[in-house]
Image (cartoon, rainbow, N blue to C red; front, side):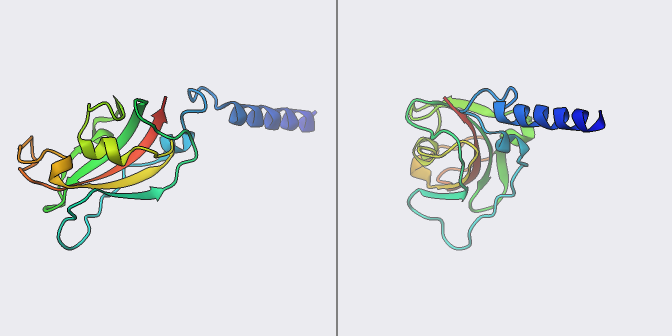
Length: 155
C-alpha cells in the first residue's frame, strides 16, 4: 500500500512537471520565476560607444523576435555612478512591451532581439540608443546605461 502511494505521488509529480503546471505554455520559462534580482556590475574604463550585448545565462525557451509581446525583469544602473535608477524587481512585477515597436529605448529594442526565454542578458547602452541629451528622472543627459534583463516570456 505504501509503495503504491509513493508510486502514485511520483507519477503525479512527473506529470505536473511535464505539463508546466500553469506556466502559460511553452513561451514561458519556470526557471525565470526562480531567479532573483541580479547585482549589476559596471565595467571599468570608459563607456563603450556602441551597444554591448552579453548573455549571462542562455535561455532555453522561445526566441524573442520583432513585434513579440515580451515580458522582462530588469535592473538598470548609470554607467558613471553605478547607481540603480530603475528596477522591475523593486516594483515587484515584470514589465511588458512590444519588442521592436519603439515602445522602449532603442538599445532595448536592438539588444533583446534574439534572446531566449529564461535567459539573462547584460546590455550596455550608449546615450544615442538610450535618452541622448535628454535628462529623465535620475538619469543625466548623455549617460551610458547598464541593464541586466531576464526574459520571462515572448509571444
